[in-house]
Image (cartoon, rainbow, N blue to C red; front, side, top):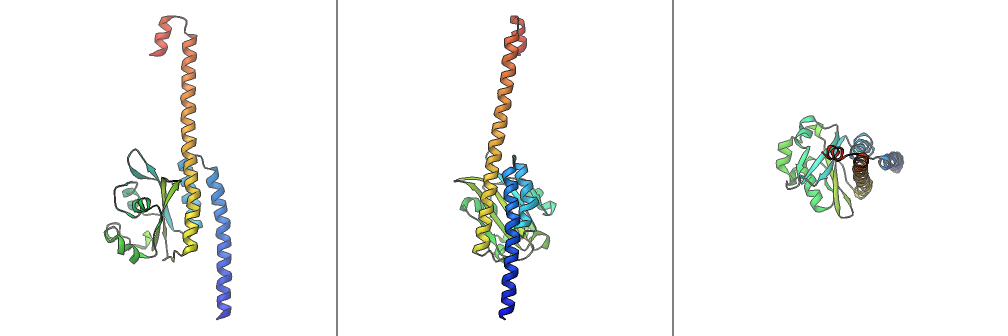
Length: 219
């Protein structure tokens, strides 16, 4: 009836408003993060719940090993996370395929997942409700450079309509920017430590009174 539709629309609007407020808090927390672990804590502690997920994980692209490296996770069975902490980019899996495609890989329910990755469903045991009923794999890009991957599991099947997809991509842009800032912070920290070490070493050399002191300082 018209009254029921109005009630549903009002409830939906209230839910959207609450989610918008939660995502504002998430965005602020991401802006304050200084390390990849800080970013991951915001993701697993706030973001996944704010977008309606039951669990998920944050990966970064490890260029040295050519793999996705898990930084943190929430509410996944331990056997799943132990197996997937380092995922080679050469494997054909939803996260790596999402990176190659440059966009989200979404499964609204178990059958949608099984249609594309039947071997993964059997291998991981996705029929277990603890592993979710719908899944999102959203690559994190800064410009054209992939910096990570967000995976989210949902307790119920999801429509993944245009609004939900756009919201996922938008908040993941903020996560990607936070990871990039964390990289820059870490690079600056390492450069500062190196400069301090060199300055300290130069001071010792300048203070050395004899050639024996210089040799002792440089060894």
